[in-house]
Amino acid sequence: MKCKICGEAASMAFISKVMNKYDVKYFKCRTCGFLFTEEPFWLNEAYKTPINIYDTGIMTRNIYFSKIVSAFIYFCLDKDAKFLDYAGGYGIFTRLMRDIGFDYYWYDDFTENLIARGFEMRTEHGMYELLTAFEVLEHFTNPKVEIEKMLSKSKNIIFSTIILPEAIPKTNWWYYGFEHGQHISFYSECTLKTIATYFEMNFYIFNNLFLMTKKKFNYLKLRLLFNNTARYGLYYLVKSRMKSLTEVDNRIIRQS
Image: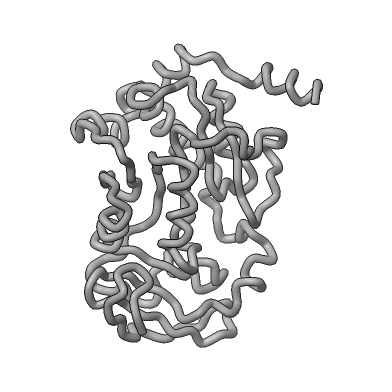
């Protein structure tokens, strides 16, 4: 078995029961540490409900990330540009960001946009200033192909995932998601750096939040924005300076 990231040899790591019915093989790359399943034949069944019932952190996660991303955009990017939430689920993050005042849009092939209707990705937008993808990479069957699609939309990507420890976690590790079967790719730090190198991107790590970009940033500045946003009140400063799009969006929807 060849690694889907670096092309080097991968060996079987373990077999586990997925969705309480399928015995699935998991392989780990000996070079970059990427852990992935055999060809995921069960995905149509796993995605009958795109947002699985076990994702109780969906609201907390979106609110938390909206604070960090708001500060990053305001202090590091063009705050008046357009932004995209990739695989944006029900549209929670897009709506939060528009309510703060950022011209954010939604895209998802598998989930209905319930919260940010009317603000879907459009081809006429061209490239976006920033693409966000939270809890998305672990769902990719072919990560390099999907990340290339993401880079065709923006050269600045913020994403989240849980880093795979160097030693493979025991099969009771919660992030495997055996019960819902949607998590099929798991990344070590080396895996993510290998991906960034392949696409000739700069790469910054902040716990379980990552920035892949063509730009070069001051690491200490990013560390402040990513790690201490709520503590230092940067989010609230940004929110006080931005003009919410909530009422503007209401008028747009009424006129459409």
